[in-house]
Length: 292
Image (cartoon, rainbow, N blue to C red):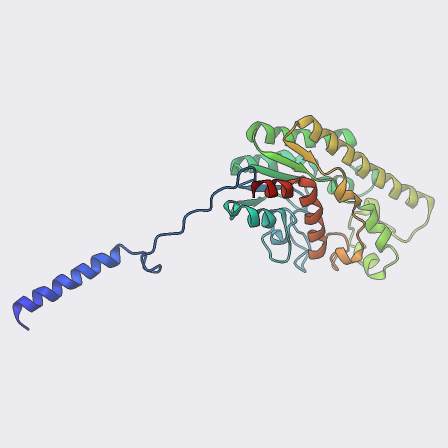
C-alpha cells in the first residue's frame, strides 16, 4: 500500500477512535433524558416508619419482611402503594422511597426510624405504629398509654426538628381485635396462632371463659387508647401532620386480607386495602388534581 494511503487510513482510524471515546458505548452517543420535573405541591420523596405491617411482613408467602409490597413505599406492581400512586402523578419521586419500618418495632423505637428519615432528607413521611405495643405476652406486658404517647412524641419531635418542611401522615392502628373475631372459628387460623402470635389477644382463641373474654376486651380498649394518642400527637405536631381520622382502624377486613401463614399480617390484598385507605386519608389525590 502506498505510504500516503497508509497515512490516510491511520488518520481515519484515529478519528473513529476519538468519536467512540466521546460516546457512552451503549447509548449511541445520545444524551441522557432530562430528569423529571417536580410537580408543585406533591412530595418528591417518601419514607415509611412503623412495624411489620408497613414492612410487608408475610406478604411474599414467607414469614419475613417484604418491603416491595408495603402499602406505603412498595414498588411492586401488585400493590398500589402511596409511592406508586405518587409516582404516576409526579415522576420526580421515582427511586426516592425509603422504608425504615422494623419487624417488632414499638413506639419507643420510632425516634430511631425518624432519624433515618431525616438522614434521607425526605419531604413526606408515613407513620403506622402500635401493634407491637399491644401484642405482648399478656395484658400486664402491654405498653402503658402514657409510655406509648411518649415514644410517639419523641419520634414526631425528631421529624419536626430534622425535617421542618416535611409532611407527615399518621395512620391509625388497624382493628387487631377483628383478627380474632374473623378467625377464632377457623381451624387453620387457630392452628397458626399457636405459634404465640400476639398472645395478649390470640392466646386460647376458642375459650369463652370470663378471664379470656376480659383479656380480649382489655386489649381492644388499649388499641383504641393508642389511636386516641396518635390523633392527639399529630394534632400537637401542627399543620404539617395529618391523621387518617381512624380510617385504617375502621376497615372491616376478613380472612381474605390476611396471609395464610400467620393469619395476622396483611397479604397483598390487605396491603392494597391499607394503601387505598391511606391514599384517601392523605389528601394527596386532591393535590394531584390541583397540580394538573
